[in-house]
Image (tube, rainbow, N blue to C red; front, side, top):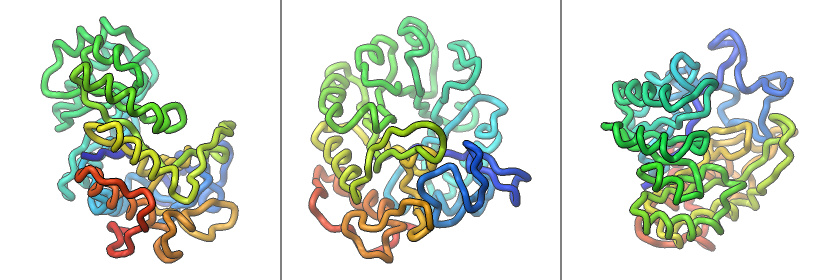
Length: 311
């Protein structure tokens, strides 16, 4: 019922010999990182088995069934870590899908090879970011001859996805596709016989990671609640969550540290107690997954304080 976008691209000096992603835009980790929020567990390496296992425990405890791991082509860091992500997820009985990113040189021909490779690794669902890089005809031809894997397109243009023979659509970008677009997208998807998997997220804040000054404020959790509510009203087939740990863009629901100087926190989210603030988005996700499955709304309801959602 719920899938979450996941990033296995973080590295540290201690584990990997150098920082990766934490140091973007000239940042100097571990104190100064390329995020407006600071992880509760500190800067970490996605290559650490212990970190991966902890992440998957949290995702599982939040009621999420599928981890959509970012994948940047054969030989990329994300590809080299795919086996470890698969192992950690399977240990928690989570499904793993691939988020097929626009890596350099990506083509329809390379994607066909990618799909064969991913199927061999056990991937049965692929989310395609920026599918409009290629024509509907090229996609339709590929989808007709592809077996063993389901492809979903990141787009609000349902006609494009249908003509390209994708199985469904998702939105990912919580700035471009707010909750107000979900009803239209899902209605069109149902009419076309496609899966509608709109993406909900807590907000967006990326100024410490680069020059992007766009902002979608979290509003103490109200933004997250409103997007889930929109997906519910749109009668979405499933929900995709942006994201577990895209710290650069501030869309993460991974626990964040409260009181870290110079960084924002989750204090006040959903009106929950201070002690639960770092884990508040995981806890709320667990509530929403259950509520969504039952066709119920959580808007106006308090944050659950029982259980830590694996946090």
